[in-house]
Length: 363
Image (cartoon, rainbow, N blue to C red; front, side, top):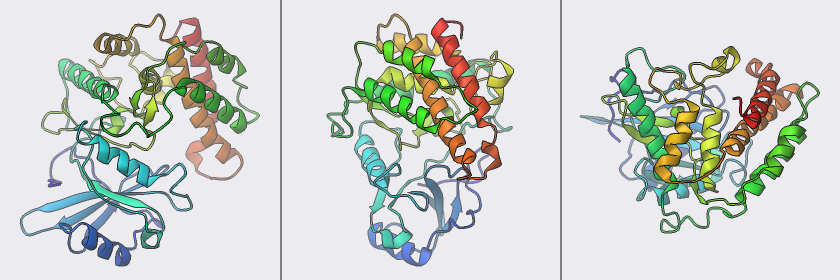
């Protein structure tokens, strides 16, 4: 939990957003009573984002060092047993830590809503670089180094898919078998429910997915939001993966569908202008694998034998279209006035067009 905030490129939290402050009068006594190594009043900062769970950094200044920990809680107005189940996220990581070293160490979980108004948990802070849309200017990677970073990131996903989830006591995390059918039915229903007048019906893609589901599925532990901006890199060696973050969507699912989800966000250097404008991770850098190279590498390393990856690629793109449309639906119906959501309907068009290209084998 030791950190040095002076390191260039290290990901840092900022000012706590108005209305999202922590009640320290209640929080500090709980922490001191349940996590004895954390004593005193911490300095509180908050990480950007906030569309999902709220994430804070608690910094404790000691005589010779600074100790930092992370607090995660659900947004205001949500129930912990729904989409923001802090207890599930905490228990998953606690069980996974002994068999998957990239998970932060869990420190404590609280289900007493009188403390912060939500369940929350504290965990070790993994100090390092988070590769967002662009790497910090201080980080310069050569082509070979960038390629090694890419391979190491993919290896950390492969390692997750090969975890003995039954041995880790995670076999009750989700239903497992039948995952493919549930995902296709679920995302088709969610897209249709969120459809607005200015986006396609999506029926062609939905029917194709329903008619082309693989006869066989593999079940493993899946992350379902595996992107570079959910990784923590070693600042001294940016090819080294220190941590994998944001386990909110992790479940027992199909590993190839997990890879398809990741590839939906994988924007490469030669993509069209619209695609490049949506990039949120540095997959465009010279040395990064292309989507096809990612697929080939993954299949070679895991030994999976499939004739055509198109189903998994289309699924990932359609799922992302569903996520985007759900966001736009809220804006369209004035449930949010965030101007960043105003033109997401256009992105939905683009993703469905990419689905059609993948179906035709021209993506």
